[in-house]
Image (cartoon, rainbow, N blue to C red; front, side, top):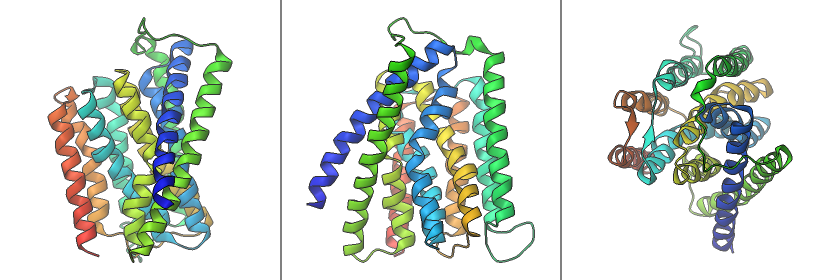
Length: 314
């Protein structure tokens, strides 16, 4: 029965992603907001709702490994797995604007959360404290404000494609909300089924959170990015991943740490190192102005190697 649920929910995830992307693109066209910012703000944050729910309730239940591992694993999968698979479907263009702020900012917050998690600044046992969390939350709202202000000053960065229809506002909102709802509900059932199967195999909470839960809660990002790529809207796909990763670190860990200080023994320096390395990858490809199919394949292989490392270490 669990396997049937997996298949049915996958169909729901794909259909929900198509609705979400169509609605988000229409909003971008209507208000002349760039595809990247729409991807980062509406699509990126919306598709990260499952991560927020999982990490927040993990903290409520006193399970810091799930709360932190979900974010760490999701961010790694988002870049190496999702961005890689998206690039295989259709090469992802990386323009100069992405290279000057959003991608470097994502790298910066990845480094920051590593330093906070390891308590690099005070040398105490590895914990993301409530004060650390408040810093992350404030940074998130600062990032969102600056992104929209910067985008308004550069209105020309929102190219309009003639073949993209502009829906009425209520239809756009309906598609965004309906698509998100379908994505989140389908994802919830998918993750529950996958975790149930994994636990029956005797897999630990830390490994489940870094792999199955992280990948499962990132399925909305995967579906939205791949659908956007097939629509040749790669800036929305890139914005989705970068925005989702920033949201995961700054707001999800920030809010979760307000429930309880997050002390995790199962998330290692290697895991944090891979998060930082994954965040740097788009910047490296940016010098070539795109992530091609070969680059995407290499990213997917890198994610497979990391996953093998986790499983082999069980």
